[in-house]
Image (cartoon, rainbow, N blue to C red; front, side, top):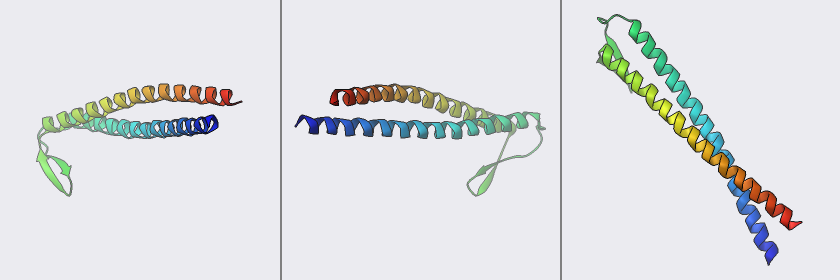
Amino acid sequence: MADEEISKAFRDLQFKTNETRMRIVQGEQNKKVNYQKMRISESTKKNLVDLDENLKYYRSVGRMFLLTDKPAEISRHEAEAKQSKEKIEAIEKQKDYLEKGLVEAETNLRELIQSRR
């Protein structure tokens, strides 16, 4: 009876550690995507600042283009960069939390294996 409980607890802890590892990897992928978006927005903003005020600025929306002005485009790219940076910070916090949980689960798993011997 106790052996079944131990094996069930072992499976549960193993599942938790595997799921946590997958979530950490997924978070890293999301972080890379948001970092790329942030870099693109910052680069585009930098290029827009150097352009002439009298030019026409178009923004891609789906399959069409909208005519906008320079300050609106600059502020839009600033907002996109800020939003991506905030997402990166949130992902980092979540990663730290998940890593703490992973360490705890691995410790519990080791203790369970030691008690089984």
